[in-house]
Image 1 (cartoon, rainbow, N blue to C red):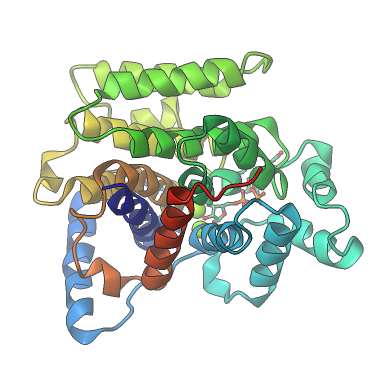
Image 2 (cartoon, rainbow, N blue to C red; image 1 turned 90 degrees about the vertical axis):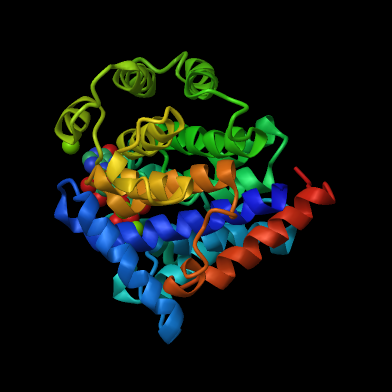
Length: 344
Ligand code: R7I
Ligand code: MG
Ligand code: MG
Ligand code: MG
C-alpha cells in the first residue's frame, strides 16, 4: 500500500503540473467542463501513444531533487543546487520557470561555482529572498524520502527551499506542503476527517509561525477551515479574495490544501463525480484558477499520497511527459525508505 501511495503522489503531482500548465497564464477560474473535455482528449493519448502534455519547472525541479536523494541516499545541497542549475540552463522554453529564479542559477554557476550555495537565494528581492511558490512546488520528494521522520522532513524541506527561496514564507510553505504529503502518506481514506487533517497542519503552522509577526499561514489556514465548514461552498472569487491562488507560496500552498480538504470533506463539485478521488482533487484545484500548474501539482502530490495510485486512469501513464520517470523515482524513494537507508 505504501508503494502505491508513493507512486500515486509522484504521478498525480505530474498530472497536476501537466494539466494545470494549460491554464497557468489565464489567471481566472477554469470551468469544470473545460477540464472534463481535456480529460476525454487525454484518453486518446493511450491509443496513439502520443505524449500529449509537457511538464513544467515544478516537475523538472521535483524530479532533479528526487534523483539527487536517490543517487546519494541523503540530501547533498551542492548536488541538488548543481542539478537544478544544469537542468535550468538546458531546459526548453516551455518549462516556464519563475521570472526571477534565473538570477540565482546564474550566480550559483558563474560567480560562486557552487561554493556559496545559499548566498544567491538570500540576495533575491533586495535581500529579503523570494516568497514565490517555487520552494513548495517541488518539495514532495522530500516527504517521500523522509517518510516517518518529521524532524528530518522539516530540516530538508527548509534546506531544499533555501537554495532558491530565502523568504520565511517560502521556507514555511515548503515545510507545510511536505508535511501535508507526509500526513497523507501516514493516513488513509476513512481513517481521518478533514478537520483532523486540518488540525495537524494547524498545529505545525502554530509552531512554525510562533516568531513570525505576519502569521500569513495561520490566518489562511483559519480561513480555509471557516470556508470548508460553511454551509454554502464559497465561490472561486471569494476564495481568491480570502486566500488567493497566486505565485506567492502562502497562496498556492493554501489553495492546494483547500482543494484536497474540500474533497476529503466530500464537498467537491458534483460535476466532477464521475472521476476518481485523486482526479477530483487535481481538477478541483486547477478549477480555482491562478497559478494552476503549481496548485495542481501540490494538490496532486497530497491526494496521490492519500489515495494511492489505484484510482489513477491507466492513460495517465501515456498522456504526460515524464510519467515513467515519476513512477521510477517514486519506486526508488520507496525502496530507500524501506531499507531505512537514510543519513542526515
Ligand atoms: O518561486 P519561483 O520559482 O516561481 C515559481 C512559479 C510557479 O508558478 C512555476 O510554475 C513557474 O511558473 O513560476 O520564482 P521566483 O521568481 O523566485 O518567484 C516568483 C515571483 O514571485 C517573482 O517573479 C515575483 O513576481 C514574486 N516574488 C516577489 N515579488 C516581490 N518581492 C517573489 N518574492 C518576491 C518579493 O520578495
Ligand atoms: Mg510551472
Ligand atoms: Mg490574487
Ligand atoms: Mg506555476
